[in-house]
Amino acid sequence: MASREIFSGAAPVATVAEYSTRWHSMASRVLAGESLDKTDALAVLESTDLELLDVLAAVWRVRHHFFGSTVQLFFLMNAKSGLCPEDCGYCSQSKVSEAEIPRYNLLSAPKLLAAAKLAVERQSKTFCIVISARGPSEREMDAVCRIVPEIKQQYDLNICACLGLLTPQQAQRLAAAGVDKVNHNLNTSARFYSEICSTHTHADRVATLEACRSAGLELCSGGIIGMGETHEDLVDMALELRRLNVESIPLNFLNAIDGTPLEATNKLNPRDCLRALAMMRLVNPAAEIRIAGGREIHLGSLQAMGLYAANSMFVGDYLTTQGQLPAADYRMIEELGFTITRGSESAEPPCLSGAQEPTHA
Image (cartoon, rainbow, N blue to C red):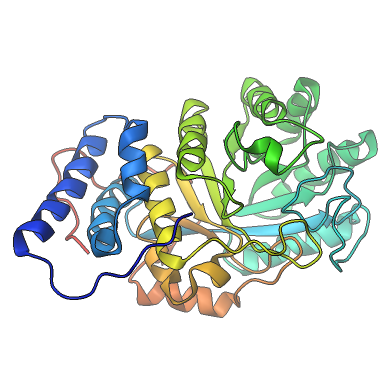
């Protein structure tokens, strides 16, 4: 993502007014039901630092329309770590990674139940079961399909399964077991995908999402920014997520872990991260958008501003890296005047057409 200079000095009043009108006009078009095109989406990513607050104020109108001032928390459990045969360049668990991480096979049922209990204690509504693999083995499928009903019986949790590439039959088994949604990130555009992985394709990932949709599962799919992709790659990914009608979109910011092929990659600044979140909201206005891995590193002191575009975040640690302390997340949400919700992830819009919109940020 290209870096930008921070503008100094006051801009002409007319210019500032033009910026504000442009972005609020774009938000109004979205709220009226218009789908933004590639040109509009690129314009958000290429906006200047001088325009950033106006962009966020406009995007906040869209976010508030669909989700009010609520934030939903997700809890991630790395149920099987390392040992993956794929060569994804960003991943510390891949076969090409030399990162020093824990490596273990699928956790036992008692350990997964204990993790689900912790998810509830941390005010999460969705418990994400993740394994490192090209796709699940028969033993792993059996274990997941056995534990999901137990978790749902004991705890009021939605279950999201991230098990790698899935066949239509496997997707149907997960749906029958009570899994609510499947996570399988596109990660980037079809054009750029071969730059980060050679052991499977972007089309393979799309096929898994389509199999899950056919099985009646909700889709959780997003990507990673900062891997060397262009603005067009990021927009193409956002548009593909819209085509797939993905309900939940996690946006990760590359944590360049030592020992991975992308360890020396550092192409992000906090303002670009905010622009990416804003673009994703405008292209996928009704989707649950989650600030995911790398937020602590790349958004830094601007993390709170990300929630004017996103309405969700992970609480606790990620797969192989530490997250911010939950208490700090709760404090950040409270200081924004937002509330944690454990309700439906696709809640009815609290601000319907013709109703009063929120005061602009």
